[in-house]
Length: 320
Image (cartoon, rainbow, N blue to C red; front, side):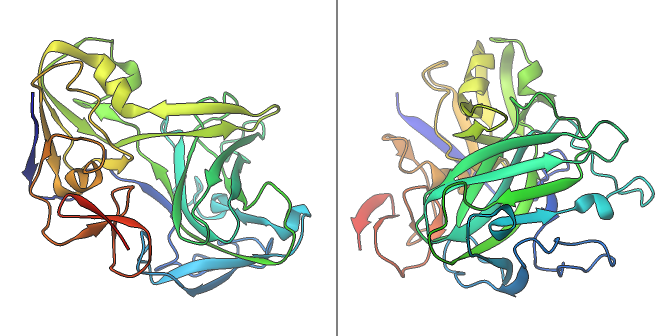
């Protein structure tokens, strides 16, 4: 049966969909909040103009550091948001069960990027929880997603976000750019977290909110092990045969695809244009009305006409 995505107008994310921004570089200088807030001196970070605005990160400003060797401080950045997000300020960071973070990063060498969350601010014992994700964009911006769902030592009040920009050896000085560090909201259906919904229980029209992502990373506490996450497959498990539609409008997406039609043939999938743009590669029988002439990469991200590679325009692949 032909799968048809019904497009609706884009609208602002609701509170349940909103990302918690830890640092974006646009309106926050390195020490903007007070004398303590901002990045530690590790890696000697500086705020610079974005060197590549024509890709997936059009931000004006970003952070730059240069890795010069393999010692911890030579390839490490640390953002101590505990210094301004605390109980006294009334702005304490509370993850509320969110265990997925993302950041934009651009560097020359493909390698694992490791993030550590530490120093809770609520008086509990300190912890160091580590997760790594692969950077493979060879000098272009990439959104790296780190899923801490298997890091059992975490609580909801971390205080330091520390980035090891490359877990392997640094053989020569290498510039690294970092931007848009956020906490991604939990995936929800009809206002309930997916993980708390019984399999096969969702009926009728299902409204999705928060983030919906798929990918993999590594839990790096002790011996590394792979962590796979697929919110689309998880949502499909929750659908009953009597589900009639899935509404994905306004959802924050990573590598979306249609995991629902095989479980419930004929189900309607409502999506905004962002989703339709992203799934052009993944669904062979897709009918959409995406913006005519817009160009996308194979990840479904809108790009400019510059650059070389394989792209999609008006639903068709071409090589430049």
